[in-house]
Length: 83
Image (tube, rainbow, N blue to C red; front, side, top):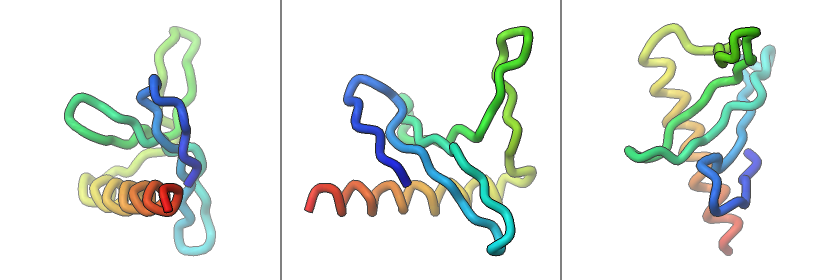
């Protein structure tokens, strides 16, 4: 977890996850939105200027589990930084 220390930016942190000790996904972003924090999955800009996710969970349950675990790690990292 890398906390981004820019108070004017919605981007708060960048995380990586390891799945089954065999696959790593980098650049999952923690974003501050109007309804709280949410995750932005790794994406790539298309020729049309749109951003398309290049990695994403298929099931809602998996997305929620990732959100829960990554936001907990973010909160823990913030707490450690403030000690």
